[in-house]
Image 1 (spheres, rainbow over the protein chains, first blue to last red):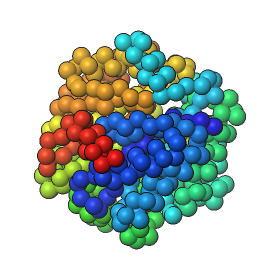
Image 2 (cartoon, helix red, strand yellow):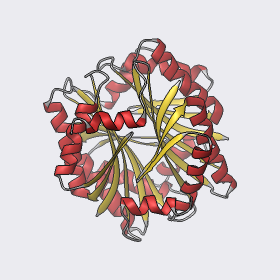
Image 3 (cartoon, helix red, strand yellow):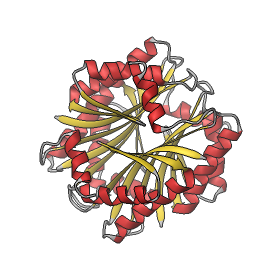
Length: 98
Length: 98
Length: 98
Length: 98
C-alpha cells in the first residue's frame, strides 16, 4: 500500500530552536529512500506505507537518543485505490485549475 | 516505545455519513488490545508503537477492502522518555489545574 | 456558521510539563460559552465559528502573555450544511454501529 | 499577532477529485494578500492572524456555497514572540543543518 504523508515532528523540552532536530529527521526520511519535500510546516513524504512508518518511528527513536525528552508529531496520511498518484500529481491537479 | 496517539480517519468518496466506517476502525483498534477513547473528532489510542501502527494500517486496508476509494487520516503521535504517562494522567494533569 | 473543532495547543520553550498552560486554555474556551470536551490529546469544541476562533486566538495571546515564547497548535475544523450535528451526535453515530 | 499556518481543506460528499475545490481556496488565500505555498498535502500560509482566519473562514463558506455538504480541515498554527520568522526562514533553518 502506497501512502502520501505529511509529517511535522515537534521536539518538546529542548528550547525553541528546533531546526537541527528537524534536519536529523529529514536525513532519516531521505536515507530511507523516500521521496520527500520539506516545506514551511512539515515534510511531504511519498512511499510504501511500511517504509514511511519505519522511517517515522526511527525519527522519534533517534531524537529520544539525542536526549529529547518528549515529542509530539502531527501527520496526515493519504491512501487511495482508485488510481496511482504522486505528490507532483496532487500539486498539478490544483495548479491546473488556478 | 510506548505512544499516546490521536487518530482521525476520513473516508472520501463514500458520501457524508461516515459513522459506519469509523465504527469498523474502532473495532480494529479495540481488537488489537489497545486502550482507546472515542471522542467527537477522533480516537485516543494508547499502546506500544508497533501495535498502534499495525492497527492503524489495518484500518486503512479494511476500509479500502470495503470499497472506500480514498482515505485521508490525521494523527497526533506523542512519545516521552522522561516518565511513563497514560491518557488518564494527561487529562488529570490539566483538570487538577482548572 | 457552526463548527465542531478539535484543538491541541502545544507551548514550546517552557519545558515538558504543559498541563498548567492547557488548563489556562480550557478556562478560556469554557468562559467563552463554548461546549468543550477535554480528551487525552486535545479538546473538542462546539460553537459558532467566530466565537471558537476568537477563543482560540485568546489562548495563543494569553500563553504568550504568560511568557511562552513559541506555540504550535493543531486543529481539526468541521462544518456541514446538510444537517445540524453535535459532538454527542457524532459519537453516537459511531457507537450505534459498534 | 503574526502566524505561520498550514491548512489542509477536505471537502466531503463530492467524490474523490478535490483539486478544483482546493484551487478555489488557493485563490481565496492569495487574494487575501497572504503569502502562500502550495505543497503536496496542504498550503503554507503566512500573515496576520485575523487575515489568515478570515480567509480560512471564507474558504469553508465558499465551498459550502458551491454545494459541498461537509468539510473537514486540519490546520497547524504557529506563533512566536521571541523573534520574527518567515516560512523561508523556517525552511532555511533546517536546510542549513542538512
